[in-house]
Image (cartoon, rainbow, N blue to C red; front, side, top):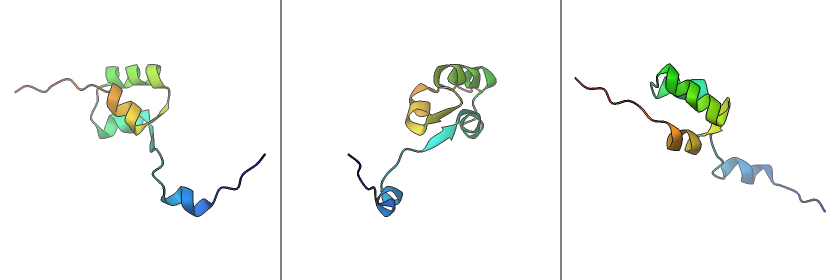
Length: 62
């Protein structure tokens, strides 16, 4: 059985945003070790929710 999906409904609904892990690391200023860990864990692409829940930044002290 097939169903028809209306293109206008999918464009306006809240779809998951998929990030390139390297771009995410640059945007959130993650170091290379953390970027490599995320790549091993999630692969080259992951949803924003997965990246935010698994990323950790080292605190910057003065």
